[in-house]
Structures are given as structure tokens and as C-alpha cells.
Image (cartoon, rainbow, N blue to C red; front, top):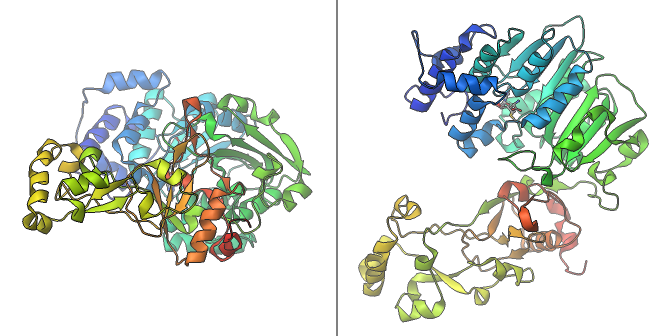
Length: 539
Ligand SMILES: C[S@@+](CC[C@H](N)C(=O)[O-])C[C@H]1O[C@@H](n2cnc3c(N)ncnc32)[C@H](O)[C@@H]1O
């Protein structure tokens, strides 16, 4: 597999096997006509697949082995491009229960993946018509195979772009459900952004922002496809509740989209195994005009049981006045007007993996003794160096040096050649070293700002004016826009201050908190032009 939609390669054996398995499970017998991309995945003639019976039993027991295969076979970066994360059954069941309690005539699963929402709805209510839509043919094939095994003939599957898919009118209510793809605005194609802009104008969403992610565009598509009385129940990252681009969504819920409730799942709820975000579920009914919307902070997925009764009403006037809706659940903390998420203008990435720290990271004295000082650079190799740096780390604080050599260096230095060809023989066959050319050349990552990412408290940030290279004990922050020294200082001061809100990382057993680069990118920060307000440490 390993490929995004529309770029299928028949020589990919995993993909061919997956197609054969779906065919053997009966994928082509349900869900309506196959798309060309789906057909291309299926084997030509009759097919049997050795694993078929075991997989069938697994599906009948309520598991989703096909969805799980997609997730494990695809790399995280391939899935990130299409926003692919599959939803655990606890959340699916609560959301489906709410949707079915609205008595829809038709249920639309927006970005259906392997069909978790669509099939749960079709199973629970064989009377309702279910439409499952996904751009990824591998996923829609899995959805068809699941439906075939479960004997669900009330599901229609469309391998298409949900955003621009026209929906035929129905007599009764349509319920939109799903976990729309979370894809950041940088990865959204220009034509889709243009579509969103013109749709926003059409809907009168005056505060629509070009920084909106794909989940926001899906929400807009749902609202634009819905008729008065139709309902929606969508699971998304909770970012839109607080950031600038989310204002158009919040306005819409207060007006035509008819917000009924918003439920925010704390990151500690560990709702997702492989993607840790603060998730939120919004329930709305097109045209519903209420004087309040219920807001709930759910600490565990179980807190969502019986969604209709959960949360406390927050008045329309408070919601209209609030800059951040999360703030209404945690009074006292507010993100000021105009704030962005860090990822809007900073890329966060991990430090370099050496493959053998004992070999590549040397105390200065050892480098001298071995005659390697000329080839070693002071580096940030311990998180405590950043923790103790008080916002600015310099060469003198680096406890170890990184061996940074090229092929030419080895030809000109005997001590270096001895080290590489002597002790180096013990490490060169390790996984990381052998996948690098030459194996001893550790990539130099020299960010202007560094951050710890694991600890009991919040991460510590420090300026790195000497551009010391970093290894993967810290993250590096790289501006995507030009920031001058004052702005960098302001950003570090802000991030180290208690004003900083937003993503709180994942909490592991024992209270250790870890921030993956993507989680750090979701911290709320001032826009670049406001950073100078934090230039002085005491400001
Ligand atoms: C977060 S996943 C959710 C999958 C499934 N509904 C679940 O919750 O288990 C989002 C899905 O949206 C799909 N997707 C991405 N862009 C899409 C588009 N423009 N139209 C339809 N589906 C899309 C992805 O392939 C992915 O399967």
C-alpha cells in the first residue's frame, strides 16, 4: 500500500494482496458501482485468499482488521497527507447513537475510511440509507468488503471527493457523520482553497480564513450540502475552538448551522492510539436557533455516553463574545484576539538520530585526546542543557560534541581514519548508520530555537544563537517566514511564559508529558507582528 489516493501502483504487492483479500470478502458485490481506481485494485478473475476466513470472522466479531491493515501498512506521512486516522469504536458508537436518535432518512459518512461510522449506522438501523464517501480507493474497497461480510445492503459507497460531491435531495432528514480529515492548510491544493473561498462568500461566512484546514472545509461542505433540519455530528481536532481560522466555524454554529453541543475530549482521554490531539465532537442541526450551546469537557470517552444530555448550556451572548470557546470551559485562561497556532509560521521537527550516541557524541576532552577536536562541533545532546539554559543556550553549555565528518576528512586525517575504520566497525551496521551515505555522516540540524519535549511540566524553549546542531533529545523550531532576532526572542519568552495555551501534549503513565512535533505546532501563539510585545523577559 503506502500510497496516497490516485497514485496506485500495481507492482505494490501489499496493495495487490489487499485488493485480492477485499475481492474474496465480496467487496464488488455491495455498495454500488466501483470507481475505476477501485476496479484497478481488484484482481482480474476468480480469487481466493488464504487469510479470508480468519479475516471474515474477525469482522463479524466487531473488529476492523482491514482498517487496521491500512493504518499499519501506510507510513504516518502518507496518512498525514490525506488526514487518515481511524476512529475507535467507543467514539463511533456514541456519535452514531446520537445521529440515529434524530431519526434520519439518510446517513452520510464524510471521509468514511474503512466504514466505521457508516457500517455502525447501517447495522443499527437497517431502514436508513447510508452513503459512505472517501477519496481513497483502498479505504472504500475496505468499506465495501466490511459491508459485504456484515451483509449490509443499505450502504452505498462512493470513491469520490466528498467536498465537491453533489447529493441528491431526500424526503426526510439527512444526518452527516464522521471524522473529517485533519490536513493543514499548507497541504491543501489551490483549487480546493479557491472553492472554499467562493463557497464561504456564497454562505456569507465573512470571517473565513485561508489558513483553514481540510476539516474546516469539510464542515463547510456539510453545511452547504444540508437542508433545513438536517443534522451533523463531526469529530475533529479541537483547534477550531480557539484559533483565528475557527471563527468562521464558530460563527456558523451560532447562526445557520445550528450548533447544539460541543464536547471536548481531553488529550489524557487517549481517544486515539496513533494520533494524539485534543479532539472535539460537534453536534448541530441546520437552522436550529438556540439561545445557548452545550459545552462539555470530557475526560474519558465514557464521559460522552448519551451525548444529548452532556455539557452545560453556555449562552449565545457569551459564545459570541468569547475569543476562544475552550476558555469558556477553563475560565481564567484565554487566547487573545488574533492568535495563531505555532505551526502556522514555525515548523517543528525532531533532532538528528545519530544511530550510535557513544560513537558520535564525545565530551570535548575525549575529542582532544583522540585527535578529533577539529572534526567535532559543540552540540545540544541532553534535554537538561535546554532546561537549564534560561531561554538561551550557547556553545559553552554544550556538554558533548558531535562528530561531523565528510569523506574528504578521512583521507586527510589519520586519527579520524583510525576512529572511523576502527571503533566505527562496531556501529556501522546498525540500522540507522547503514541506511545513511556515508554511514558516519550525521545530518546537521541547526535550528534557531530548540525545545524539550518530554518532562513533568511544559516544554522548555531556548534560543540557539550559535546554531548548535541538535540530536533527537530535543525538537528544533524553524521559522517558515522571516523573523528577526527580536521576534525570535519574543517567541521564546512567550512560549516559556504561563500565557502559553493550547495543545498540552500526551500524558504518559507517571505524569510524564510528551509533545510530538505536530502537537507542539498546535500551541497557541501570537502572530509574528505581535511577538515584539514579549521581547522583554519581564513583559
Ligand atoms: C480521519 S479519517 C476518518 C476515517 C473514518 N471515517 C474513521 O473515522 O474511522 C478521514 C478520511 O477522509 C478521507 N479523505 C481525505 N480527503 C478526502 C476528500 N476530499 N473526500 C473524501 N474523503 C477524503 C481520508 O482518506 C480518510 O480516510
